Every structure is written in C-alpha cells, then in structure tokens.
Image (cartoon, rainbow, N blue to C red; front, side, top):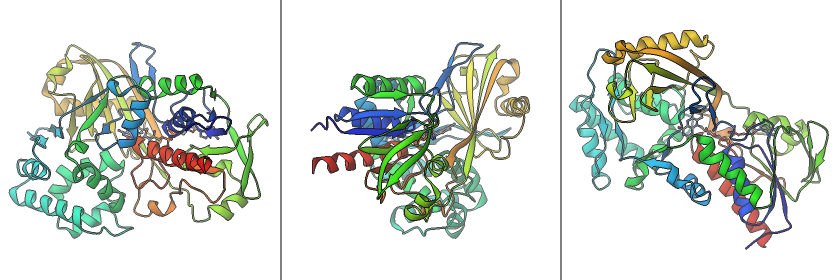
Length: 441
Ligand SMILES: Cc1cc2nc3c(=O)[nH]c(=O)nc-3n(C[C@H](O)[C@H](O)[C@H](O)COP(=O)(O)OP(=O)(O)OC[C@H]3O[C@@H](n4cnc5c(N)ncnc54)[C@H](O)[C@@H]3O)c2cc1C
C-alpha cells in the first residue's frame, strides 16, 4: 500500500528520525526531514579524525541479537552485512594485578546455556554462582516492583558485594549507563529478560564493521532522497503550531513555516519540551517531568611500539576496579575505551582523562609498558542517555499523542526499553505503523 500525496514532517535526524523518515518514504509518503545540526545521526555518528584520517564513532555502539527493529531497519537499508554477529556472550575480564576468568555462555539449548555459563564463571565463589542463578530465576518469573533501584532489588535477593562488583555492576553500566544505585530495576530486568530468556540468539553481541554514519546515516539519507523526500540540515525547528487539537505547521528558527499532514517529533525529551508551548505541554503532556541525562566518555588512543593483539585476545574486554569499563580493539594500533555513567569524569580536562586511562591500561596489561600513545581523542557525550532512574518510566511520553496528527519518537519515549538504538528505532516503527493504519482507514 502506498500513501502518495500524504506529507510528513520528521523533526530530528538521529536514528529515530532517520528510521521514521526511511520507513515512511518507503511506504509512499512525501517526507521532509529537518535536522538542526549540519550533520545527521544525532547521538549515533562517525567522523574522520583529522590527524590520522581514521574514521571513528562518537562512541562504541553495540547491537544485540534481540534488536529486532534495528535489524529489520538495517535489512531495509541493505546494510545488515556491515555488522558482525559474535558468539553468544563471551566476555573476557581484567582487573589490576588480578587474574580473572571470562564469562562464556556456551552454545547449548536455552536455559541450560545460562546455567552452564554461570556455573563456570570463576570470578564468583560457588555459593555466589548459586545466588546468581537464584536472581536469574526471580527476574524471569517474579513481578519486579516499579520505582526500586537495581541495587535495592539485588540486596533484597541477597546478592553480595562481590557479585555486584564482578557481575551486576558491569552489566548494569553497559545496559543502563547508570550505577546500580541509580538504575531502574524494572527497566533493567525487562532488558535482561529480552536478552537472555526469550531466544538463545538474542544474547548475541553484534558489532558494526563500519563507522556508524556509513551503517545508518548515509544509507538513510540516500533512501529518503531516492524516494522523493527532502532532507534539510542546519534548520532548527523553533515551535510546533497547534489549532483545535491539530498541528497546523512548524516554525523554523529563520521564521519560515512548513506544513504537512502528519508531524513526527524525533528529538530528545529536552528538545521536545522546547518546541512545544507551555499551554500545549500543560494540556496534553502534563505528567511529563524533564528527565536528567547521563554522560559517556569515549577515548581513542593510537599506540606505537605494540600490536593491540599483544594486550588481549578477541575484540573487546571488560575491566573491573577501574574507571575504564570496556576496551575495544579497533585496529593493530588503535584502542577505544568506554567510561559509562561518567559524571565524576566528564568535567575533567581531556589531558587529565587520558592520564588516568593510560595509568589504568598500564595496570591492566603488563605489555602496555612497552608502548607509547602517539595520538588520542576524547569524546564527551554529556547527554548520552536520559537518566534511567527508578521513576523515569513514569515520565516517558507515549508515541501516540492526544494531538491528532503528532507522533513522538526517540529513545526517551515509552518503549519499555532502555535508552538505546533499539528503543529509538522501535518508537519509529510504532509511529509509522499507526500513521499507515490511519491513512488506510
Ligand atoms: C557514546 C554513546 C554510546 C552509546 N552506546 C550505545 C550502544 O552500545 N548501544 C545502543 O543501543 N545505544 C547506545 N547509545 C544510545 C544511542 O546512541 C541513543 O539511544 C540513540 O542514538 C538515540 O537516538 P534518537 O534518535 O532517539 O535521539 P538523537 O540521536 O539525540 O537524535 C535527535 C536529533 O534531533 C535533533 N534535534 C533536536 N532538536 C531539534 C530541533 N529543534 N530541530 C531540529 N532538530 C533537532 C538533534 O540534533 C539530533 O540529531 C549510546 C550513546 C552514546 C552517546
């Protein structure tokens, strides 16, 4: 079914906006995508480092086997081959001056694969492994109360400090970009259930083989334009205009007014709050409190005097008892280091951050001593995700709004998922399905 003739304005060119615009243009809508910056991609993009000419992302992004919507979208963009699907969970760990074993979930039927993986996880005592299995059973069968933190939920289940340090904390930081104390147990356990208790392949880690812009952004832009759509860069939407429960246009920063049959907001929550007037907010979105945000710092270090294979096997490693949480091998000489929930680091000078990182790399990998950092890049994403705190779920807007022709998408909307690419793309699919159903009627 095509919907030729119907016009849609999509506000915001991150993955939610790009997914909405490509899906709608694919289904015959006349799409105009409006982005305030000079580039598309939002919080998911890559660029060329000026010194080395290497293409780097604004931070390592990982997809998972359970990212249905993202994988469907990549199929539509014909980009699925640009990702590399790994084995089921296989995560080596390191800590300063301590030998740790990896977490390996074997390729066995579900849920035996989890049981075997946990029972072989030597960083925990045998009793702690049994406690971990108990938590797994609780999370798959028990109702998790709203408004409690992951830390409180774990403490109620008798999970001790060692379990938190060697298992729960790294998992929580990776999934929620928040500490155990600040993360919502409800959201966290929903994500874990989806990854580990639905289908075995859902826990596969999928790593992009190209830069994020090559994977998502450029193919989307090409598809929108090929389908007759328009992409406007460097145009900020100032306000959406409302008359009788219906959007009648948007005003751009340069005071131009654009109109369409349908409007899709794909901006972050703070951006949405800016483009709607106070009276619209009070009337239609009165329970919406602006959520805080949580930063991620990504550090790229280019090394000489060492091959990155000398440091560790595989493509990434988890780090315990350090500021560094994950180290990814990007090439023979390039490492990417991730620090999630980086509130205590984000205001430090870049040089200082690199000093801390290099010191920790020395403590983690004895071979690092023989190398030198010839170049580095520190990327601070201050608003990497919204704060996924225990009460955040109450302030995420529904995609379908009380305003007849306005849909709201983005990772912060009411997707039931953490702030991820998958959440953003899922919200786009939800909006597009509703828009199509409306015009079919
Ligand atoms: C360093 C880092 C690492 C991450 N790692 C992962 C990961 O491993 N896996 C994962 O799934 N997710 C990860 N995420 C999260 C993921 O990137 C986000 O959830 C996702 O990109 C959000 O997309 P979005 O389209 O909802 O919002 P955004 O990407 O923020 O897009 C919103 C767009 O709207 C534009 N905009 C705002 N206001 C206006 C306006 N008034 N007019 C016009 N345009 C406007 C903005 O410029 C922006 O381009 C990570 C994020 C970061 C920063």
